[in-house]
Image (cartoon, rainbow over all chains, first blue to last red; front, side, top):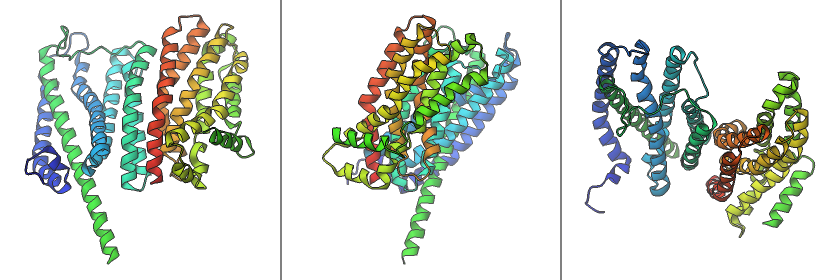
Length: 246
Length: 218
């Protein structure tokens, strides 16, 4: 055993439970507080946009949830790779735990987008590349969750879901380019890039930034909580199995 | 590999093998479409490439759960796994069998159904070409989905949920190629993209499918 501290120590479920239990309240509370600050700031202390009016304020829910929907899948991809390469169970369980949170983020992004699109574009839904990509992402999440829940054996399910996540990532990116080619969009282009001339004005950007950080923290808190639940459930099953043996 | 292909083809063609199921489904879809959208040839001509592609995709989906199920149930898959033939080869042959029994009949039948849907004359070649190029990708992707669900009793629904988003790029480029060909537009981009998807899936996806089969047989 090396005495050098490394990140992989937290692949040990006991260590992970200790660390996550210690930081979970802080992450959850700071995420909640920041979300309240970001939303109140955005809703009540920014001017209405000169063209979009007050409808622009849904941006404080729409953009952060869309951001987290994509990043949740990316986190699942990384966790799946770690599981396949290093066989750390916590990693597989974290990927499993992130999927329903990612679905929730995708649904929030789709629904707030529809509510925003109705007054702006005059329609709830168009087959715009970005909207279509999100619908496809939603289907990928559903397939991933369905595969996890369909297979009884935990390790088999973790292996299969990881492979699906990797193959799905490739196809998701392919779909992104395919739908871009397939239809022109109504959705505006990237307006939060760090290197662009034309971005949203700072007065909207600052509360949005707070809201994005808040969504990130809430995502982290939910994933930690759900991973802890998964670990506990597995421990419980192990205890029950041991008791039945005696 | 050839012996496995011959065996699977024999099993598929004999009674109860499900040969022709996909083709029959394809015929039904394409014959029923004019009844549901109306007989105007203008309208039919504009939707024909999309309908034919959708019908072909659904017909492929219909026969996917048979790719591994029978071999898994009677234990042949375990024997194949312990045979000297690499699993990637087995999986590729299964995909090829699926294509020969489902995809190829669709490709051959599609131009005939194009007449029923009043496809413009210059569209036939492109429709045939796009299906010929695209259906192998459908079979290979479908084999991956079938491999994921092989151990499950009622995997049909799960299989379609898993495969649905994976089929999207192939469908987009395939149908776009057929549509542009029928409208007499430039076809180079979708043609190259479709060819790229097909050859990349044939080359790479069997590796993932065979890994999945090995996990499922563990």
